[in-house]
Length: 257
Image (cartoon, rainbow, N blue to C red; front, side):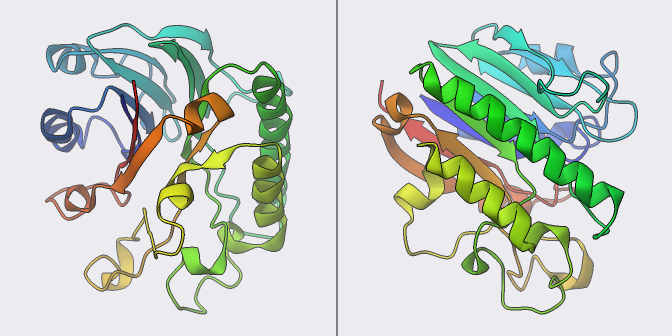
């Protein structure tokens, strides 16, 4: 079973890129973020023609999350992160696929910081921590996949001082990520690539993709039952280098059946 997370950065604009990757990589489950599409604008017909069922929650300008399943219909279980009924941002969706509960999440960026956007980022992640603890306590196979907008460690960003004030690398979000892992979740990429430099995002500015000036923002956290099945993890770098690409590359893990 192949499960991937991919911040597509506008699903309609990059639909050809998405469809080409689906055809080449054949993932069984894909968690998409940053759809930048309303519910009605989501390209359901094209994705179904590619062999995937889908559930999604759109947003008029930014945000938006989806879960695709190859040859199956995801069983929708949640369309919002609990804890704030007034939060209308489309940043979390959850569904069951092939016996695994899977979440696609798009955490707030938090810039500029300090300020209200950073405080919203911290508050949103606290809600994620609470919900993640509840999911982990069920003992079910669970995957929390998405763009966490957190660089967990200094090695997860290229050598630079240009991000020193950026919300992505601040001590508070990093501490929140550590508390998530302390619940028992396994960071799939780090489990497989313990000592390697791994990036998943390269800004369009300042020639960062050609010179590999990247960040690791996209993570798949696995509960115990899923972590036991983990056999591989990879970043599909070729996708980032394609014409019209998202500024993120897909991250895909392989699980034993």
